[in-house]
Amino acid sequence: MKASNLLVACLEREGVEHVFGVPGEELEDLLFSIRDSKVTFVPVRHEQGAAFMADVHGRLTGEAGVCLGTLGPGATNLLTGVADAHLDKSPLVAITGQGGLERLHQESHQAIDVLRTFEPVTKWNTQLDSPEIVHESVRKAFKVAEYEKPGATHLELPEDVAAEETDAQPLPVRDRVAAAAPNPDALARVQERLRTAQRPIILAGNGAVRTHAASQLREFVDETGIPVVSTYMGKGAVSDSRVHSLMTLDSGENGEAATAVARADLVVTVGYDIAEHDPADWNDGTAPLVHIDSEPAEVYEAYDPDVEVVADIGRALSSLTEWYRSAAVTFDTEWYADLQERIVTAVDRDPQPEAPFTVEGVLPVLREAMASEDVLISDVGNHKMAIAQNFPTYEPNTCIISNGLASMGIAVPGGLAADLAVDANVVAATGDGGFLMNAAEIETATRSGCGYTIIVFNDNDYGLISKKQHDHTGETFGTGLTNPDLMTFAESFGIDGYRPDSKNALKEALQSAVGGDMALVEVPIE
Image (cartoon, rainbow, N blue to C red; front, side, top):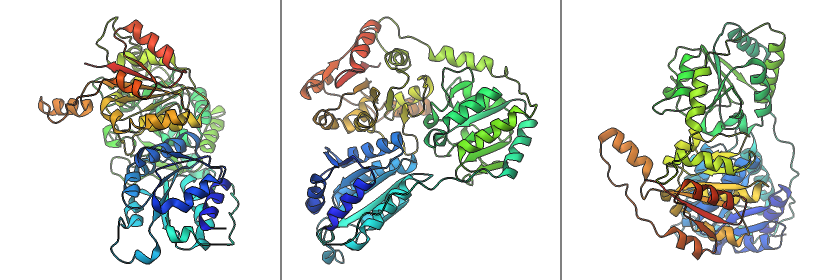
């Protein structure tokens, strides 16, 4: 078969259902190979949208999403979404076309060194310079992308190689490399720290969700009564409906969760990466640290754990739960009650009967319109901070926030990927700034038969930057925007549009939109 057919056969063997991308001349053989396969090619409006779709697919399913772009600008347009997946630990395989090998030794049209360009934002990448290495390279790309800690990989396919013949066949997909069992000596050291602690706290990170350790974490918390605060990407590891949840690590004016961490006499991090939330913001160095993760802790003065358990996170937590049941150890379970009460009060605020709205006031109405298993995709901006701290999350992977790279523009394409990946309802929440960066993907969504809700918090501004500028200097510059009439904009795509002007209208709009056909809800923010 042709090398392009082999590559697609390998994608089929990996279980790939969708490839998101933009066609290009150098991809001709590969595109027709996809046409003749079980894989669905989803043509998108911009390669960045394709990479965000693959990114969110990987985050939700644990299986690598696949994005496709041609050489030169097609490849560089993919880069932001690939980098987002890399820092958010989301499995992704990027495929880019390239000119023929005979012209890559010299300056030529659209040719840049894509491998070196992608190197800093991938776990592994290679050029498929021979049809005989395609099967091995595709298998490696998926294996490396998906094993802990997951991330992005990249394959470059020159157009002349794509057309060459090969007798190679796809390699079988083996079980993923499993993390090791916890070391007994390391567990004993954790147990000793727990024996001497009265006010321990757990900081749950992305890894607690990503490695499916939420059930073991919940069991440990229920047994011990230890409170849990999550990072933005760890939301849902422990349900925010539980009394043990202190919701999300914050840096706001009240800072109840951060205050709880400061009060604690032991901090146990579970699946935490320092890229999620700088430990310098929450670690004052007074309480000892225990690090439970699939990889050793990063070397950082502000995060220097006393004990590291490098192992399968769920197995480590189960071992600690079994130990606790017979250890005759008790903790103070009231020391955080006042903080938990204030957090719940702050979160459970309703908007005023009439506009103007605030993001914080809208979130309880949105939460009421969504079931616990429904998925919220948050873009990046002022609203992200509110969603992270004020949107109760009850199940793992139901509140998707980019906080490694923290790239604007992810919500609309991410909503499409989520709608294809899960059976639950999907809501994409974005500010007006991030919305128009990839709003063209609404056309991709309608063409693909998707149905999810887009909420646009519209303040005609890059609001988060305005807030930070004002906090620092008392004034703002370079942040003001103007926007099209978003109701007309929605109508132009053939989707429902809502612009509520009161609390009751907001409730009606969200109840109608969530779970229905493709819709856009504009919420004016002053």
